[in-house]
Amino acid sequence: MMKRMMKGIAAAVLTMSMLTGCSSRPNLVLQMEPDGKKCTAEFRKSSKDDFALSGTLVVEEGEGVSYEAALEKGSVLLEVIPADESLTKTASPEQLEAFANTEENAFAKELKGTEGGVIETLAPGDYYVRVTAVQKPDGTIKLEVLPKN
Image (cartoon, rainbow, N blue to C red; front, top):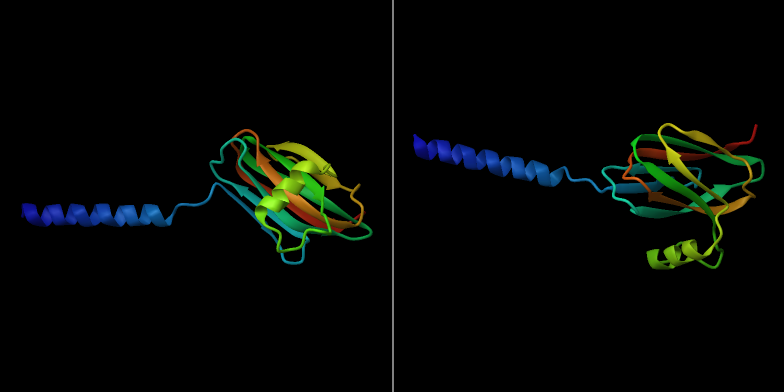
């Protein structure tokens, strides 16, 4: 009887450890739609200074970029950075990060809670999006390229 109970407990512990291992998620996921018109960043138990950089947000004549934060806690620095034509889609993450750290932002704002707005001042062109955890955020940031009103 005791042997069966020990085997049952061992099986339960093994199952729980497998489920826990399979459910781990990254702290920050940044996804850009293939057409360059939508971008979503998801923060889960992120640490201060966690960041991600995406390419390429495509803004055409007569378009603006809406942004919307849905953060349960913390804050995020959202940066929109003009893309460099000399960097191709095959640029390494290190090359993109070095570029993003040296270029002037077209837009930068710290977002908290359920804040949102529209960036209408971007010239037509391609832009990188960089999101950085400022105060251990949980939640999402969404950007979408839309026609100006």
